Image (cartoon, rainbow, N blue to C red; front, side, top):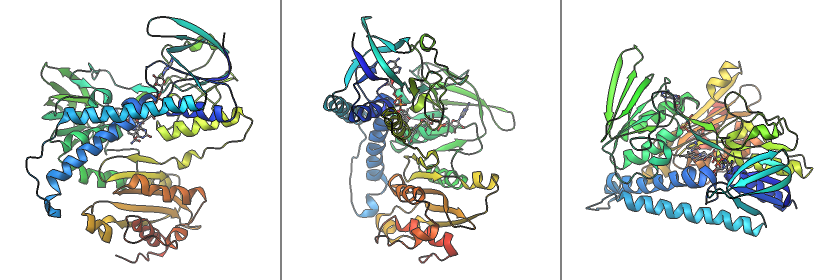
Length: 467
Ligand code: FAD
Ligand code: NAD
């Protein structure tokens, strides 16, 4: 029987990154993945395919909406959804193959099959044909990720009532799509179809879309998406969704408690994800999960069984690929005797609409509720020369700093390429910079990054220059 220093179950961004770092640190490493391809949710049915379709649909949207103003005439522009899906699949397969290459390069033994505990030091791997083998391991890292969540009445049938996985491979452009949940998935995949001409209607339980982000972001994003054709039904409680053969009907209670109904070709259920531990046989190792299905871990990502760790979507915290990656590196370095650290306050969050929304640190609402004395600086994207040149004028940058020390506590932005712009704030906050520190840094002109400097100037002494 093969024996390893560390075995990782699950090859998503948490698992495969943990495997690479363990191997770099000299550990004999095994990686177990139940599917044929490596990369988990993120590479196969998450981050990468959704961004591929967002990029394709954005090109189509620009060709049909903004080229003309740039003086470019195009006629007969058509969206070929089948080709878009095929390109997306090519991107996914190249990216997944890249992970396989990295495993080989780092001499990591990859096993395809479902991993389950025999004991706290032995794992059985059962492949799709039912053939099984066992391996011994001193340490085990669980990185089994998550699956789409749903509530009673909205059970996906994967045909008309779909999850993100099916929404990434529809082979038609629906006339109308209902989206339950105005969170990240609903708005990103809703954007893909809205740009291709689908009437997208979002049924959201909360008072705002992206309810966990700074309220100014949800207000601004609501305006942007309404212009793109989205309709929002906030404070609606979904009662039932039914597949009617060629479409769906959805009934909900609005905030007055009245029953309202909607019809569409498809209904995308996007109300969050739940941790996935099916098939692991946690009981054989004595590993505890909590009542939300998350594997319980301490501050060192160690489960109640000392040689077993858990990372990524299957444990508490943001369900984000980069969070899972950081945790993978953390556990590998911990096992090697190092003293790693993760600053959970500085894990940025992004919504890949256009413009993108990005945020790091605390929101204004969180800081106010905690009684912090704060200053706020903001700057609209439309005041930038770069924005006028590109005609991307929607959005704003908001910097919140401590009223007494000026330390930056939160940065929230809706801007072209905000996903990349936010990193200036992350670096600044990692080094505990003040708003004035950013305000005094020379930013290249003309760029969108000037909005960060201007918002910092505004936060410093209300001395933004270009407004
Ligand atoms: P996963 O990526 O879920 O990987 C877990 C792996 O474990 C899977 O491959 C699974 O097959 C395997 N597995 C499970 N059980 C077993 C077992 N018993 N034996 C063997 N293998 C097993 N995050 C971002 O940061 N940015 C984005 O832009 C983004 N976009 C997203 C878009 C969509 C549509 C979705 C659904 C998610 C998106 N996410 C995004 C979230 C991101 O995909 C997850 O946070 C991330 O994949 C979590 O990584 P993980 O390693 O914890 O688990
Ligand atoms: P989410 O938590 O972002 O949004 C879920 C939304 O559904 C919320 O607005 C919530 O109020 C609403 N909701 C919950 N129950 C409801 C109900 N019964 N009726 C109507 N609305 C309801 O979850 P998601 O969009 O499904 O995404 C799942 C996870 O995947 C997230 O944690 C996210 O971090 C991750 N993800 C990240 C990205 C990214 O980083 N760009 C992209 C996609 C997914």
